[in-house]
Image 1: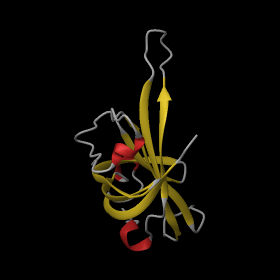
Image 2: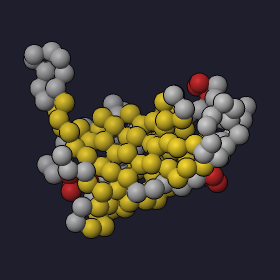
Image 3: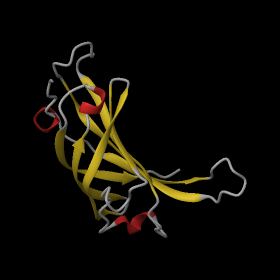
Image 4: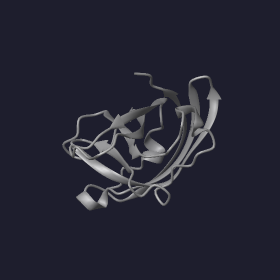
Length: 147
């Protein structure tokens, strides 16, 4: 099976963090505040057949129910999968979502509306028989997305 080797071929670009309300379809469901983090990767070339070059993709971390009073309370948080089992993380590659195990997603406030994010992921490419699973480590900034 091929290896993509994201660690060598690309790096994380500045992304966004946002808070949003969600209410299920059931009338008894309450609105819940969730957080989503989106981190694009620098375009890169890889040898995976039938993919347009360069490859453009992003990592999405979603459905984090953090119980924070304010999005700025993310400072000091580490959003590991083991602590937030109901969350989702994936990388878009082609038309496929490849799940990620979040080992680390640590936030440090760096400005009025920004955080430095340090991450470690295990990306599950093998589930789709796409490529070998791999670890990807990154450090980037995310800006608060206001709606």
